[in-house]
Length: 504
Image (cartoon, rainbow, N blue to C red; front, top):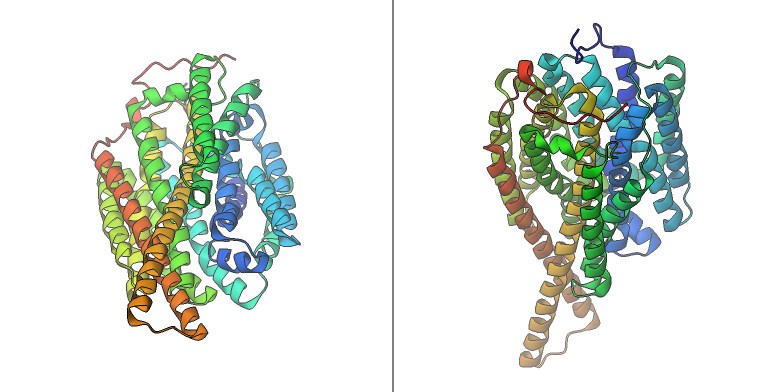
């Protein structure tokens, strides 16, 4: 009997419950993006601080996702879901009634602890439940959750922030989280095999220090500068910890993350492309609301509404892309999608103070259309090359890569934006002072304020355009890698290389 045989009848009811839990968790990934300017004013903090609500959430998820391979392998899926959803619900309640920024950030971190197991759990159940020749369509439906939920977040967030207190963003999630938890307790069954493995705490500590230090260094560079010892010191500590973590995993029989699966070329290539695309995707989800609200002065609801077409396109395309993957494979989809994404991202480098609604919506929607053709096909193709026993590690690595890359990408783009904005603002101030000196006219207080507002707006616009230019370069790199993709043949998948299996 084939050791990679899957269940005769997929547990659709159970998958539906997991979908609801994963949807709620993914929705929280970008729910606050449009609300960040409002929260920033409410608590009197700067953009570098408030963005931790977004990047911190992704960071905690990225730190804990490596342990998800252990959790999925060691514990029954029913118990794992119940514990994870309970923790997520507690974090949501904390954030929904947070009296200050510190409690709000803590609530987001607790949310992330619970959400970190949702995606790996659902993905592993689906990999177990469907044969490889049908995984494209099944994972396409999963992509509907993974992509559409974060994309819908800005629109929902914009409406709530404009008409209610921002805390309502969390309060409306609470009943859905509780309902998902109740159904999980009532209906979930255990469909995945478990093994008696142990959690290596030194590995978990190394991964936490590595990813946490790297992200903190990049996040604080915008306010402290790259020459600050705290910035380059934490990045160096993070890189050293990451190297030690990798070396330790490769020497262990029961690693926290089975990095030897990178011996499978298509999985390795999929991981590289996912890293690059995640950096571009999540950073764009923060930069676009920053432009629309801060530069253009558009209300939160209208700002979110402008991003809705992109969300709908991604939601519609995900199942279609899954079916196309089953027919044509990943290369054509990835090359087409990344070409479209690159062109649209370059279009966003041309934003003006008075860019039309049509232009903004078109560029953002086209960009999301391109991204919808990339992520799930390359991930599914990579996972198809792994043996069934390595699925928990494959999904854990994929989710770690996406979360950490998304968090670091967002932090880097915000840092680039802040650095460019400050430099441009100093240039504009110097020009304004030189002009005033030459003319000999002393501007009034009202004129000074108008001049300051104009300088701030122009400098920020330049910073955002420059960040999108960097994002364009990033997507071009991903496009180059896409030409090397090859379709994994189902009959020979996971049989091309000998990978040492963890001991029982």
